[in-house]
Image 1 (cartoon, one colour):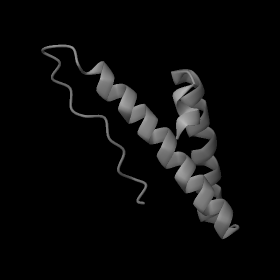
Image 2 (tube, one colour; image 1 turned 120 degrees about the vertical axis):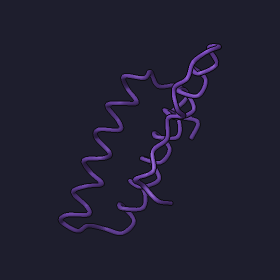
Image 3 (spheres, one colour; image 1 turned 180 degrees about the vertical axis):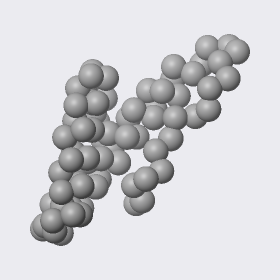
Image 4 (cartoon, helix red, strand yellow; image 1 turned 60 degrees about the vertical axis):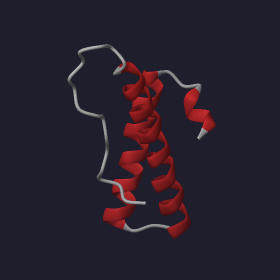
Length: 75
């Protein structure tokens, strides 16, 4: 999502925390299906942006770190 590209890393991490908490509550306590889907796609967008930024940082020669991937949320 384009909106995530304008946020700082700190703002993205705060949004990740907020939306993960919402997502967890919906799963545990039940909730509106539309809210669940919106929250799921928002989380996927935040995680995608964080992954993309991490991949850009990895261009340093000799960097042996593995790709930064999140696999808990299934599309």
